[in-house]
Length: 255
Image: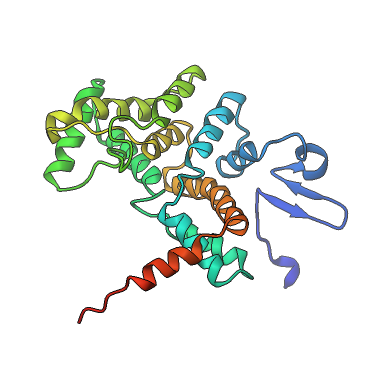
């Protein structure tokens, strides 16, 4: 019976003498020859990216790695304070906070753009964008990727990622639609909001052909590096206990 069991995989296998990954010999063909970003892309997309794709993809990862004392970073530091024997728990605590307000916008924006493009007809991207923003406003939904709590005029990551995509010939329909949303949304919202970095990351990843259902995973992959850095700094210059005591000493009971 055991001989009849089969569990197919196109990823990794190993035997007593070798490890194979993506059909390559891990030790001979990949280690020292393939960067981690390139490998992450390859693992998900099932194809090896070319150099321009790697450049844009890794720029996205850098853009999402760390933004200072965000809730995800604070959660990781406080968990490490509580359980310094559980580095994995501190990392997990930070990653679990990746949702619709932090990190998840990357996927939300990619999904929104992909769905809008799938439903649209015609070539007038500004008209498509205007219709999408108008419908979202009528349905009382936020347009993901619009606005930022800190960068009120321009998110510094946005023009850089658009420039890299353009330089590498990877400026595609999702980025084009996202920029159109940036142009037309004041007509509907009566105010101008910046296109945020998380949103442009989602658009860029979608233009790379990566599944929009997986985009949050790339945001979490990037943030894992940032959280590891936060925990390393917490070891060198601890602040988590001060955060905890500040909240605890200022707690006020209200029935």
